[in-house]
Amino acid sequence: MPDTPEHASGYLLGHAALEQRRLLIQASYVRPWTARLLRRAGLTEGMSVLDVGSGLGDVAFIAAEIVGPGGRVVGVERDPAAVEAARGRAASGGYTDLVTFANADLSEFDPAGSGPTRQPFDALVGRFVLQYLPDPAAALRRLAGFLRPGGIVVMHDMDVSNTDASVPRCPLWDDCFALLSALFRAHRITPDFGRHLTRVFLDAGLPWPDVDSGAMAGGKAGSTVFTWLGSAVQAVEPLLGEAGIALPDGLVVDDGLVATLERAVRESHSMVLGNIHYGAWTRLQSVGLP
Ligand SMILES: C[S@@+](CC[C@H](N)C(=O)[O-])C[C@H]1O[C@@H](n2cnc3c(N)ncnc32)[C@H](O)[C@@H]1O
Image (cartoon, rainbow, N blue to C red):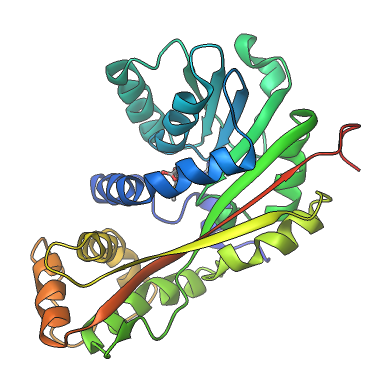
C-alpha cells in the first residue's frame, strides 16, 4: 500500500475526545467477541502478551483477565494521550501489576528496551490496528519476531465496505454507513481489511491462520448499532469535510444523530448491520518464524 498522509502523520482518527468516546463505545460492544477470539486462539493463564496499537487499553485489559496474576501484558501505543488514558484506566481498574503501556511507534518499538518486557512474549494481539499501518504484512512479521517459538499471533480487524447495510433499505443508514468506507478509501486504507487477514498473515511468513467473523446487527429501539454509527460519524465529521466527502442532504451531525438514525431505521422496519469483524489466529512453528 502506498504511503499516504495518514500513514506518514499518524492514526487517521487521532485521539480527540469524540474519538476516545467512539473507541470506548466500540470496545464495549465488541468486547465479548474479542475475549472469545483470544481464548480460541489459545491465550491462557500465565501467558505474556504484547498488545499492539493498544489505544485506551481495552484489548490489553481483556488479555489481562485471561492470563491472570501469573501473566503479564504490554500495550504499545503511539499516541501519548491514549497511553495516558490507558494508564489511568489500568490504575483505576486494579491492573497496574499486570498491564503496562509503552508509548512508541510500532515500527520502532523494541521490547528489549525496557525491563519487564525483555523476555519473548507468548502471544501477540492487535485489534483494529493493522489496517492503519503502511505495510501490514511487514509490521506483522516484525512484531511476530518478539514471540517465542510456538507463540500465538491473533489479529482482529473489520470490514465497513458493505453497501447494503439495511434490509428493507433505510437510505439514511446506508448513506451514513457509506461515509466510513469513503473516508477510508480517501486515505487509501482498505475498508474491508478484515477480509485480507489470511493474505496478510501469509505475506508475513506466518502459518495459514484460522479465521472467524461476526457482524454487529440491530434495529430495535436502543440497539447499540445506533450509538456505534452515530458516534463514528460524529468522530469523523471533520475528516469528511477535509476529504471532500459530502454528508447526506440535510443531515445534522451532533449528539442527536443517534436518535435520528434510530427514528429512520424504525420507520423503515429495517434490520441494520454495523461493521463486520474478522479474527485470524495462528501459532508460530516451534522452531520460530519460517
Ligand atoms: C482503532 S484504534 C484501536 C485501539 C484498540 N486496539 C482497541 O481495539 O480498542 C487504533 C490504535 O492504533 C494506534 N496506532 C496506529 N498506528 C500505530 C503505530 N504505527 N504505532 C503505534 N500505535 C499505532 C492508534 O493511535 C490507535 O490508538
